[in-house]
Image (cartoon, rainbow, N blue to C red; front, side, top):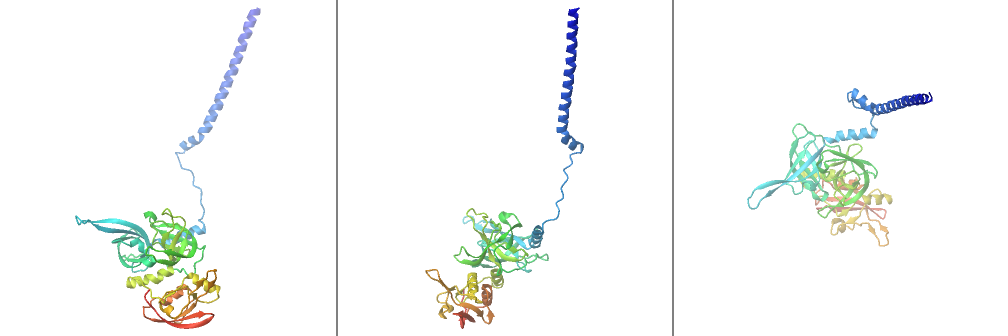
Length: 384
C-alpha cells in the first residue's frame, strides 16, 4: 500500500508541473507575439493604407527678405544673357577652317536697340559670339565697341519684335560698405544663377592684363566664378550698380573676393562705345579718385583733391599741384577742383561727367582752391 501511495503521489506532482510549464510557455509566446506585432505595426499600417506618403507640414509665408530676392530675380532675369564665344582656326597645310569654342561669360541688356554689355575679356580674341536669352533664343552677336582699359565691351543682337527689357540703372557714387548686393550670371555654364552678398570694400584698384588700372572698383563677397564675368551686380532695389569682372582666388574659383566695374564708369563709357566704337577720354592731365573725394571732405572743401598731375600735361604747365605724402607720413594737400566750366564739382563722378563728351583741343575753365583761395585756370584737353 505504501508503495502504491508513493507511486501515486509521484504521478500527481508530475502532472501539476507539466501544466505550469505549459502555462508559462503559452504566456511567453503571447508576449513574444505581441512584441513582434508592435514592431510590425507601422509596416502593416502602411501596407493597409496602400503606401500613402506622409502628410506635408504647412510651411507658412516666406520671409520678407526671401520674397524680395525672388521678386528681384524674376524682374532682372530676362535682362541677363549668356555669351558663348568661339574662334576660327585654319590648318596651314589643308587650309581647312575649324571653329573651336573659346569660352563663356555673361552680359546684360543695355537698351531697346539690342545692345549687350559685357566684359572685354569675355569676347577678346573671339571671332564669333552667340548670345543666349532667357526665353531660349540663341542669337549671333556683332561687336560694337571695346574698351580694354576698363574691361568693357558692347555687342548687338537683332531681337526681333520680342525684345528683352533693359536692366534698370543705378549709381555707384553713394554705395556703402555693408550694403546688400546680388549677382546674376552663368558660372561654369550654369545659366541664370543668383548669388548674394554685400559690398565688402570700395575704391579698389584692379590691374588689367594691359597693364592699366581700373580705379574705384567695387569689392563684393557675392559668389562670382568663371562664367559670371560681364554679368550685372545689382543693389537691393534691382538696379545695376556694377559689372562683375574678376575674382581674387588662388584656386580659380570663388574665394569670397570678387570685383565689379562701378556703374558710373559703365554709364560714362558705354554710350561712347555705341556711338564711336572706342573710348579714349580726353584729359587735363589731372588724376582724381574717390580717395581724393574723402580727403576733400576731411578738409571741409566741397570739391575733389588733385591726386596726380601728368608730366607735360596742360595741368602741369599751368602749375596745378597734386597731393603729396612726405617721408614722415604727413599729407601735404593738393589743389582742390571745385568747378569745371561753371559746373560745380563735388565728386569724382561729377568731375568725369564734366569732361565727358568733350573732344581733345577744347578749352576748359576750371576753378581750384589753393590755400583756401579760389584760382581760375584755362586748360586745353588732350587725348587720354
